[in-house]
Amino acid sequence: MVRIVAILRPYRLKDALAQLRDRQWVQHIHVQEVRGYGMQKEHLEDYSGDDVGMEFLPKIRLEILVEDLFAKLAMEAIAAGARTGRMGDGKIFLIREVAAV
Image: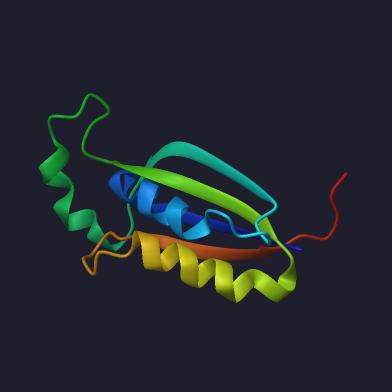
């Protein structure tokens, strides 16, 4: 089993979830509001009025569990829904799970 963790732009969550909807191989979905930055750090001044400060941008963490066989499909589905083609689209990580209780 693998865990797919995607960091997305908040307004792309709905589209990413639409790509996963009705997929029998998606076992669990978790969503969190998070803040951070990656390569777009030089654009943080756009958020200087935020009460948290300039250090972090609003993002969404989408996490799903799938069998190994479906990992590539899951990553492609999330990317299809989340991608805008601009810097700051986010990242998708694959984490192998050893056990679950």
